[in-house]
Every structure is written in C-alpha cells, then in structure tokens.
Length: 155
Image 1 (spheres, one colour):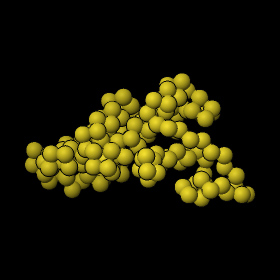
Image 2 (tube, rainbow, N blue to C red):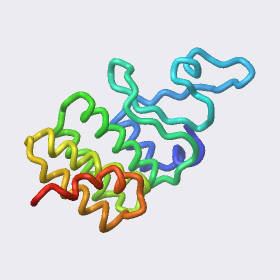
Image 3 (spheres, helix red, strand yellow):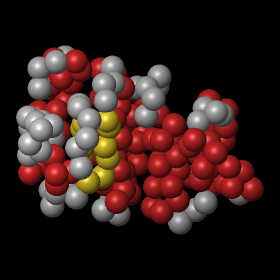
C-alpha cells in the first residue's frame, strides 16, 4: 500500500491503528482466490470486513486522502451498525461528519447516523434530523432522496 492515499502518513497511521490491512496483487489474466472471493473487478478496491470476514463497505477506484479516511471511518460505522452496536456506529458516523465535512462519504454518514439514532433510542426524531441535514446541506444527493419520507416525522 504505497501509492495514492495509501502513501499518506495519516492514512497509514489510521489503517494500522484501526484495521488489519491486507494487500493483494491482482492478476487479471489469472484471478487470485481473493479477487474471486470478494468480486474484485477494478483496482484499487477497498473492502471493509468484520472479524468474521463479512463485508460492510466497499470503495472502488481512486479517492483523495480525506475522502479515503472518511470512507474508512464510514466502513467502521457500517460494520458496527450491521452488528447492532448502535452506540459505536453513532460515534463512527459522527466522526466522519466532524472530521471530514467535505468528503463524498458524508451524506451517507448523515443518513446512517439518523438510522442508528433511531435504532438505539427507538425514537424517529433521529431520522427527521438526518432528513433535515441532508435536505439543507446535500439536497442533490442520493441520501437526501432516500431520507425524503422522514420529512413527515414531527420534531
């Protein structure tokens, strides 16, 4: 992992502190078992897995360093979310939003933050807050469209 965002010291530190990074060669004429297992069809491909090897987030293609860090944190949050660890998911999604406000992953983090808040407290106001934030800051995003039904939830 020595090109693009992988060469950045901040990215390397975050990867080493937070994940167990695995790098694999890709041979298009003779696909490796790892390429087959994870359906790798383009490089670079980042796959965030849990300790049991289940996928929770994927990024295909080059992204700049700040976006890459945001996607790593988003992947961590989605792993916690998928494992029903909503407090940890909320913390991770909040970190994406706070530390990487201009990253492309932020609208997705806002959406999942609202859903995690809903699941943690069983209170739909988190969904409405997610809608309001997405409508105000990211109105053209797919995530704003997904959150549109939450506009009807009273605050």
